[in-house]
Image (tube, rainbow over all chains, first blue to last red; front, side):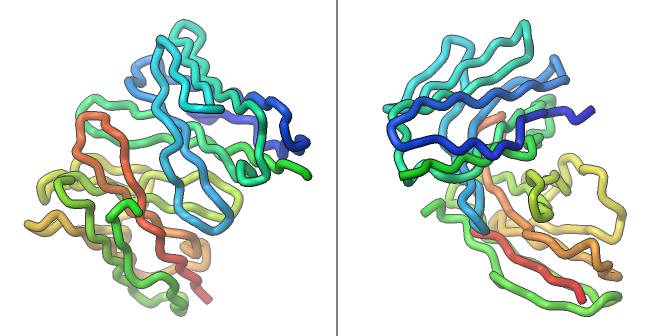
Amino acid sequence: RKEVEQDPGPFNVPEGATVAFNCTYSNSASQSFFWYRQDCRKEPKLLMSVYSSGNEDGRFTAQLNRASQYISLLIRDSKLSDSATYLCVVNRGSGTYKYIFGTGTRLKVLA
Amino acid sequence: ETGVTQSPTHLIKTRGQQVTLRCSSQSGHNTVSWYQQALGQGPQFIFQYYREEENGRGNFPPRFSGLQFPNYSSELNVNALELDDSALYLCASSSGSGTEAFFGQGTRLTVV
């Protein structure tokens, strides 16, 4: 079983739709959590950090459930420019701040 | 722009050769991590350097080695290249302590 698991998709949604991505992680000692966005053949770019209290940035809302070891990302009012791969990232901490990436979820927003 | 730069952007090498990839970290960042991303996969952690010392290593063989310099820039060296080493190699810099990491644009390595 992978340490960070995501549905690879693809998710094909019409413009204006709301779409939700989920991610589970297996290491309960994980300390910090992020969503990154990666466009085709480009580097990952930080979309947002994820906090237990939940956080929102415009059309994007991220949520963390430590008890269930579950992270979510909600995108409202999808735009064509949201088409990308969304990577769930878990940081174990404990002296080595290495990121464990999921395989990513592909999103395609259709006109 | 993240301020993290990698060179070269693309590289083609022959099986058995050696390669050195370079990364300049963002100003103020003392931690550099290297990742390998195969096609269709998420990035896999290779190793991390903090203040010139290796600070954790992923499941990669010893032919993957690295360095960090006093200015916190870093190199990734791969010896005895294999076809499966073909991938996008990403460098990420951070200030440590679980803070966000920022990635360079990557080096796309093709081994033929």
